Image (cartoon, rainbow over all chains, first blue to last red; front, side):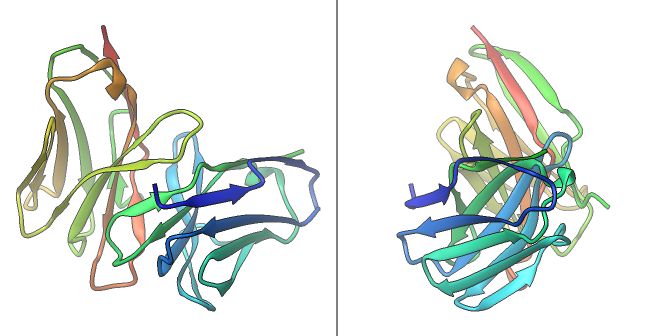
Length: 111
Length: 113
């Protein structure tokens, strides 16, 4: 257990509203990732970070932005939520770029 | 373009028997592969991995085999136990690159008691 927490764990929001999901880690891992999990698609990378203020896009980054101002926190923002962003979101951390440690997930519903 | 594929969405196996989960990839640059296990309402947990310089890695009941020429890896669980019932994801990465991971779509394993 790499000490990863996600908040909130569940959220229901309306289309067009901004949403921010938080990932917090206590392990001082360099790498942090945001994934979404959808039926039939597995886990898809949204954005990742390889250091404080160093971020890059993943496979499905449209409509999402991220920020990492401290080693321990990685924020995922949906500027204007859409129904297609209803999903389960997982944060993960890693050290050398090999195995990853996942958080418990955030279930987001956009109505 | 799905670079990592798990073509079997589900698999049922009798307790005590072998479970074989398969994964195919298309990018020959991938040089490190991982398997994760996921229970409902939890995050995935790391199970076992293999580097492309090896063709087999074993950890207790879990063995991963890599066939680079076929771009295929498999996870063997022997003997299978009811607690192994979960969704299994394979993932691949290029370790000299940007440490991005590509995951398969998952295989749901059900071990029947």
